[in-house]
Every structure is written in C-alpha cells, then in structure tokens.
Length: 358
Image: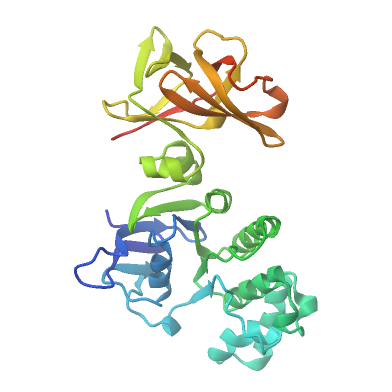
C-alpha cells in the first residue's frame, strides 16, 4: 500500500529499462520518518542501487512517486534536490586538496566565500579531518578519503543523506570503525539517511529501518528486530543471518507446554512460538536459539554431531536430528566437548520458533 505519512515517502516506485522486460524495481513503497536511518539491503542485482539513484534524481522512474517533506520530487533535476550523496568509489577530485573537495558543493550553490570557509572547517572537524584540510586526496588513506566524501555530502546540510555501499572498499576492521563514524554523524546531525548495502551486519547495526529487496521487489520492510526475529518470507530468513528452516514441522500443544514436531526427530519443547502455524508453513530457528547437550533433558530431541567448528568465542555445531540438519551456535565456554559422530541432544534455549507462511 502507498505510504500516507513520513518525511521520505516512496510510493509504487518502478523502473523498467526496456519495454517488455522485467522491471529492475517493481512497485516499491515505503515511508521513513525525519531523522531515521534506512538501509536498502539485498544481493547484487536486487534493485537497491536503482532505488537509491531514483531518490537522488540520477535515474528517472518509469512509474511511482518520491516525496520529501510532503513535496513531490519524482521528476525534479538533481540540482533542485537537497541531497548529499556518497558513492562507492567516493568520486573525489584527485587534483584538489581536502578542503577544496569539501567546498565543491557549496561553490556550485554560490555560497559566499567566507561562509564556505566556515562550513568546510566545521564539516572537517565533524569527521575528524580538520588537521588535513590542505592535504591532497592522493596522499590520504582509504578511510580518510571516506571521511572526505562524508564531509562533502553533509556540508551542504542536505534534506537527505544517500550512501551507495560506501564501505565496500575498506578492510574489515576499518569497515567496523566507519560504521560507527557514519551512524554517529547521522545521529548528531539528525539527517534522514538511506544506505545501500549487501552486508546484513551493516544493516542490522546501523539502521532504524531495513528494506530487504530481491529481484526488484520489496520482500520486507521493518525494524532490524522485525527483520531478524520475524522474517516475512523464506528469502528474508535465509539472507539476514543464519537460519535453520524446517519444512513439515508442526506446532503441538501438550498441556501448558509448546512443542514443535520435527520430521523424524520427535517433539522439541520451545518457550514460545511466533508467526502463523498453517499447513505448509516453514519453521525457522536461529542457530544461537538452540543448544547441544551431552545429556538430554525433558523436551530435547536426539541428535548426532556432524561437524564442530571453533570460532573463538563461539562453537558452531552441525547436527543431524531425524530428517533434519541443524546448525547450533553456542558460546565456547559453555559448549560441551563432543566429537564428530557422537550422540547428543538438542534443546531450545530461548523463544525460538517462528513460522513463515508458504
């Protein structure tokens, strides 16, 4: 359904590059409140960057509307949109120094020179690069170039802050640092932001809302906890985090106890079940919501250890339970020492079973 409120409103947004072909983006609708951070999440080719570029005005949509603060900007040219954008490649000018790169957008808007100087220095201090204002872009590290791109986008005080996989060129440790930097800057400035990523960790840790996309369509839109704990589709369950997806599981009530019947494995006692327990539904259990035990307790199911992988703070088991292969992830200091091939038991540790309708 089209959005009726929100600072950024996207209603039935569609992009078809060629008549008669499948749309790159197909009737996407969502609404983001002022100051919220939205992550567009999905695999390569799902339409998330095309959606972002339509919001930015870099691509004209085939159908649908984009509104910001109630104003329809669907077909407005880029220069008439108050948008700051950070590209995957950063798109900095290598022949200019840091302060000149940051000043570029203000110069294009014919801001007075004295005001430009003040705003540029404020933006550079915000990204902790004030001491490098005179340095050439080619003399900066990847993380420093990332900060320059951020400063250039926010110095114009945009209505929307758009980012197209800006962390993909950084190493893993620097990505973690920059996640916190970007989120901190966004929260301090209160800018409504849209962030494109294929990394579920980035989306879960940075965003207020997540839009999961697949093949041009919106699979699910909601908070990180909604997406992770209550996925609406099998695709979302598999794409966001690890998941055990059990076909043919059925919900059973035994007195006051809740159980699910796993094919060939028996009944697993669970504290609570969410979702719709209809015929044909798929049961989803996250690996950390299960426990492997050397001695079975009431409500456990028998299993056999297929593999055990030490991951430092956790151990990930793969176990065979009846007709099911389940992943179980436990903290290493509480995990039993079980050899591959040994008999074990699997139990539920928390509210763990969510049924996904067929």
